[in-house]
Length: 286
Image (cartoon, rainbow, N blue to C red):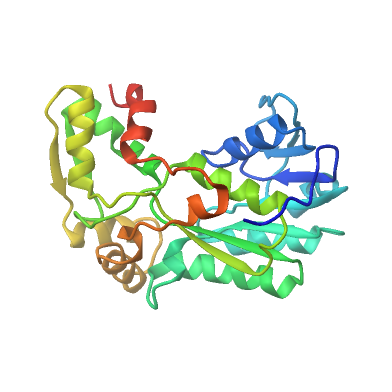
């Protein structure tokens, strides 16, 4: 395990996406340990105990210069098709940044990972070219992705899976946060890309059965046909070719379904299962 090289009272750490599933856990862990944290959000009403909350937008470079002043370490997470531009806005604006931990995606690892893989490969390349020492986090499927089923479970008792019943090893967002904090605070992670998954292999139909068990009600699982999944992606502006490639990638048994020991190896913590996450968030499905 890498050795710590930042102590409480050290340099300022910027956390982007601070109100997200991962960002909130990063901020909480850093502030609890006494580190100086600047939490970036678009919501001016956000409050974090022990952190400096700043309002800004990765899509607006003019909002970034002041919030990057005095920052020497940053966790950066972009969103959607503009992730490369958002990451570029950070690295172009940063002065004196000595470490960047970038949220990427496990989708970059297969040779043909679809449009999401392309977005994240381009973002990684942007950071590499910046000359800033970097660490990439490449999580697979999040346990919290199941929240996309919450409305249909509440209304109909149905889970509709856009990825078919492809095996996955979903990772708890707070386990990603624990790895991010390790990379932010310890040496030895520069130039490393960490593939991150949860500890167990499961399927969307298996997750549906588990949610039904915990909710004590029967749930129905339905696979969305691949053609319908492609149409749904093209409705958001993705080309048909890229949508078809993405759907094929998401429906192949590969790295997304392979449990890896990375979380435990880097943090010493036992990664949490989908059952753990579902038990913590069961009210969202009631």
